[in-house]
Image 1: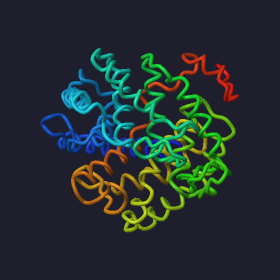
Image 2: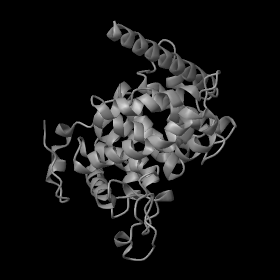
Image 3: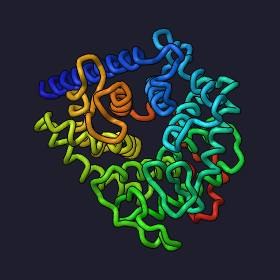
Image 4: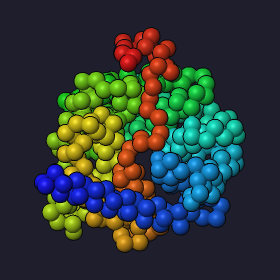
Length: 359
């Protein structure tokens, strides 16, 4: 009898989450402009497109096929017009989204765009393997910027599209993540600009947003877990749930806490799901995380966070908050392919000394 009630509660919670997800997707689709974009912004449009793709939507989908098709068309036109998708953040996000779109649809005209777009990322990578704002090649690296570039690189590799320097960029990125990892955490950036900056990395703050970014990036670049990824996962589960518990106890704290953490929760959730979804860590995470996200949703389907970079009680802020929340509710990487190392055996012969065991 007890098991029966547990199953009823589980089914109810899953149905509730699906209902919240559908409401959010409906709102997001309604915010798309007639030209196919969201706010005429490639970063916003890339995040929105990812939400539909991760639900398995394609241009052939009955309900949201037109939404996906026009989104892809706008991003393609915007790239052809400008030759890039703006700053490193928006360019990395849009490249990631379009690479996933190509993997799912095989639309021919996307191939040259992806090759060109990812070449900009490869050319913008620092010698040490990381990235900075506007693809600067100085001593400063930025883990937040780097996370989206790594996702774009791996997503492009999975398309099968051959791009000169892609494998080398993935190797450099993997090496970078391993080098800047320390004590179970990742820093936001290095704090010096001298020639020995790599020796003066700020000691990581275990409760910051970047541990999830670094952990997930390393997982995607390697294709499976190693001791550093497991240590990062442990840090996430031991430190990042505190703020979520505080909101669960007092929902009025959502705005203050989410403003500082919503971006990081996206990567935290992906890290936990992909490395521990069949173990206790995933259950521990979702037990606290999902109720917080669901309860914070507006009855019209969107989320709003007044504080935080890019956030605000305005159209653009709502789009960013909603896409980040929705991508957390949709089971991460449920539809999209994982990094199959058997497709990249050449990476095992890299000079970084990292060997991936093939399953």
